[in-house]
Length: 233
Image (tube, rainbow, N blue to C red; front, side, top):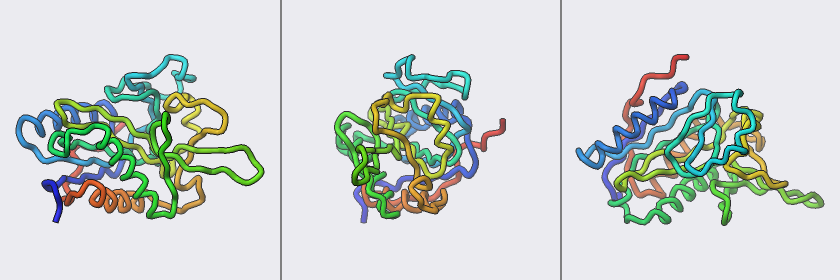
């Protein structure tokens, strides 16, 4: 028994064009609000690129020529997307789910943390720092925390889009072209499940995300085909 209608769950097996994904999300958000279309969670990867959220600062783009840079309508600053990173776009009716944005964001964080728990990784959130972090401090060394998942969200007429990105096995050097989410202080970095020494595949991550989503969002999931054709460079 779940508290909400069935949510569609789609997975794209190869990278999807970023602008095409944004256009699809805009259409689906309108359809959810105006036509009663089902809610959707869409898992995918993008080709290597940087996105600038509504709070992005020009100085945080260190290498504008490294990868394409896209303006994103989500909140937040600069982030990276690319192969080996599981992006989950969540198109959910937040009005029907309590009309509480802070609670909704907390559920996104709890979703990622629960999925990481499937691999015995302790994900944590921090006041003033968005996303999900892993404490990698060692005795006798300076404190160190690495970000393993980013969260960026937008609501349109109380329907969400954008979502979360979980680092499974991306090339972590690709983050060097930006200041990820504007965080540049000593002791903070970026990590992934594989960087933590875990032999996790994208399929493994998808299974964990699906299980955790049902538990956190109290929703039954229905597998549906990916909504867009795969990216062709």
